[in-house]
Every structure is written in C-alpha cells, then in structure tokens.
Image (cartoon, rainbow, N blue to C red; front, side, top):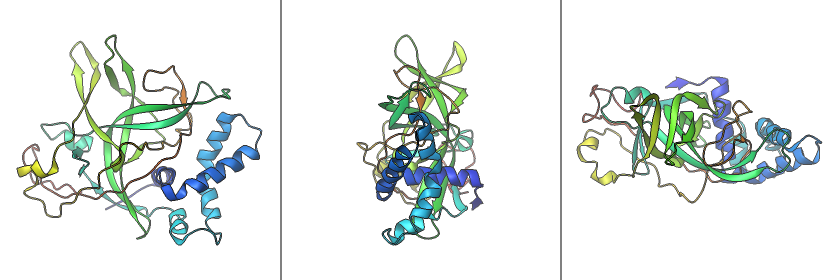
Length: 292
C-alpha cells in the first residue's frame, strides 16, 4: 500500500471523471457555464473548464438531482492505494519501467489513442478535433478507490514526443517528455508497444506495436499465481479523453502541424482488475511478486 500526494490524486481523479460515462452530462453542463459567462478566448475557456471542473462538480453533486454514486465520486479518491509492478489486461502483460530493468523482455511501453481538441495557438478561435496517438512508458501501476464505492487501475506514465523519419517510421527520445500534468491513463484503455534503439543515434528509439497474446496460452508464466485476475476486454472503438496538460508543452504527436493539446472530447471508461503472480521466465528476481 502507498499514499499518493495531493497533486497525483487530483490528476488521477480528473482523468477518471472525464472518462466516466455517468459524468458526461455534468461535463457538458460545466462547459456551457464557462462558455456563457466568460468573454475569454476559447483556449482560456477550455483551460478553465478543465482546471475548475473538479471543484464545481463536487458542489454540483450536493443537489438532490444527482445520484448517490456520483455524490460519492465527486468527493474524490482515497489517498491510500495499492501498488503493482505488473498487470495483465486485454491480452497484454505490462510491467513498470523499474521492473523491466530486471527482465529480459520489455513490457512497459504503452500507446493510447484519443480524440483531442487542438489549438494552433492560444489565440486560435477555431480548434480542430483530431485522433492522436500518444506513446509512453509505465512508471507506476496503482489501484485507486473511492472509499469503497468503486475502484480503478491506472497506469502512471512518462509520455514522449514522437516524430517520424523519412520512411514514415515513428520514433521517440526518452529524454523529451511532454504532458507531465496528465500522467495517468486507465489500464483498460491502453495498448502495448515497445521501443527499439537506433544504432546510429543512441537517443532515438523506434516504436513497434505489440500484438495481444492469448491469456489462456501463457502457460508457465501464470502457474505460480496466488490470486490471478485479468480485466474485462476494452472496446477499442471508444477513445479516452485526455485532460489538458495546462500548456506545459506545445507539441503534438502524429502527422499534424505543431499544435497545442487542449481539452478533448469525453469518452467511456472501463474497469479492470489486479494481478499477483511470480514471473520466473523473464525476471532475474524470481521471488518478486507482482503486487508491491
């Protein structure tokens, strides 16, 4: 068990709310309020909507027309969380970067697609909606709960700037990070990727997609499970909503001109479960359990 700091709790709580089906009508309600009572530019309105929604929603949820579930959700997360170094969901086996360092295989790379409203600049009054792909690596795996109401497993990630070479192949630099204010993503939403180093440039790593495996054919990898679970399959037709990163970086990943990522469209969330098992085949530390 670990205790999360206030900033991390706020980041995770905001991400969960913006990806909760039940909260979408209140997200739209707050956005309408911000747009109708402000003469700010659209960029600043979107910032206000993202930054102020949590506090507004907690107050709004005190009204009688809000369900008990949403009232509980509005009160925020328990700061005490479970921490894992490995997780299995959607046919992928994920590790944190720290666990990867002790393994023969790489399982910490993640990719997620999101429908994102993008601004060319802070003065842009005609933001564009794009489907963008984000690439990162898992630093922490945590199970957070709303004081017994419900729980979610999230990956805390380092997100990397992505570029393409002359052949259209995507690559990243691990030392060029972005979206530092939005590190969390639901475990159910991500797909796996891995990074291959470029021998001609030690700082360049090419992105390779991973095909989901069959959990029922993982064989010896799961023989030592003490309490093995895996999450429900995620509907890949739904894209996650990524909260704005507060303007810390103005880079965009994919084949689009340089734009600043702002408040995206909302979408569905999905829940999954934790995993505790020994990984004797890949790990140099065979006594380490998946839950820390």
